[in-house]
Image (tube, rainbow, N blue to C red):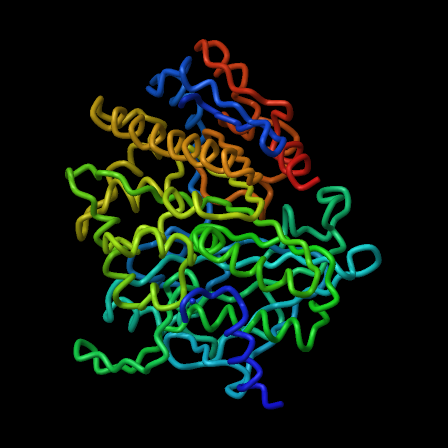
Length: 470
C-alpha cells in the first residue's frame, strides 16, 4: 500500500476530529485526583516583599525571540526554543513527500530527531514537541520561513539541542526516563502544530508561497515513528513540550493518546511553560486574544488541528479560537496531564501582558529584570493580576477534571523563568534547592509565612512529577 494512501486511511481513523499567589509557589498536590486547593484561604495578591524575593536573581532563560514570540524568531536556529537533550546522539530523520501532506512554512519537509532508547527503556518513548513562538500574519510567517523555525533546509543531521532534565541520559539526574527513546519533533509551522490548511498560500503582502500545515507535520512524524521506528511496539509514551510546544501538547494530547491506544500504548502528557493566558494587557486590551484569533483564521486550525471536544463546545458561539488557550482547552482533555509553570514567567508576561511598542523595551520585563527596583505600584498590581490568573485557571481546570475523573496535576513556582523540565532547572527544582531566587519548594516556607496553605505531599518538582507519572 502506498504511503500516501496509508496516511490518509490512518487519518480517518485517528482522532483528528472532523477532518473530525493563591500563593507564591502554589504547588498542586502530587497525586492524581487527590489535589485540593485551599482557595478560600488564599489571598490572590502577590505581596511585594515575596515577589521581590522570588525575583531576586531574575535571569531570563531561553531565547526571548524564539520561544513564544509573537512575530516569529529572528534566530537562524530553533535550538534555543526548546533546550531539552544531552548524552547519546540524536539524529535527524526527515519525512518524504510521499509520506505526508506536511510541510514547513517554506514548503520544505518536516522531520524529527531521535535518540534511541535501550534496556528497560527500549519500548518507552518521550515525544517532545519543540517550541518557538508563533506567526500571526502572512508577513510574520514569511519572515519566519527564512529561519529554522519555518524551514528545515539548514537543520543539522545531528541535534545540537541540549537534552537535559526529564530527557537527560544521565541516570543520576533522570532515573525514571534516562534510557527511553527521545524524539524531538521539530517545529516549523508557527501554529503549535495546529495548521489544517491543505493548500499552498501565496500572499499578496509578500509574494511568497507559504504552507500552513502544522497538524500534518505532527501527523506525519507519528506515522513515520509507527511504521519505521518501532513505536508500534511501544509500551508507554510521555508527550511533552515547552512554550509553544506546551500549547501544542494541550491541544494534541488526546489526539495522540487515542491514536496510540490502537496499538495498546499508554500515553500521558506534560506541559512546561505553556500558559500564555487570555488576559487584559497593560493597555486595557486583549492583544494576545486578537493575535490568536488571527492565527486561528490564517492557519485554519479548526479544520482539523484542535481538540475535537473543545471544537464542538466552542463552535456554536464562533469561538473555536479559545481551543488554542490551555486555560479553556484543558477542560476537555481526557488524558493524564501534568503542568509545570512559573507564576511570573517573564516570557508569558511579555507576550500576554505587555506587548512592546517598536523601539521600546518591554516595560514589565524591564520591571522583572530590575528585581522590582524599577517597578511602579501599578506594575506590581499587574504582576499580581497575571499570577492570580494562572492560579485561578489551574484551580478551575483541576476541579473540572477531577469532577470528570481525569488525572490532572500542576507544579507552579515563582522564579521568573520560562521552561524548566528540559534543563538544569529541573534538577534545582527537583532537589528543592533555591537557585538564587525563590523557586519550587524553596518557597513553601515563604508561602506559609503569609498564611497560605499549599497542599504539597512532594514539595519539589521531581517528587510531584514522579508521583503523578506512577
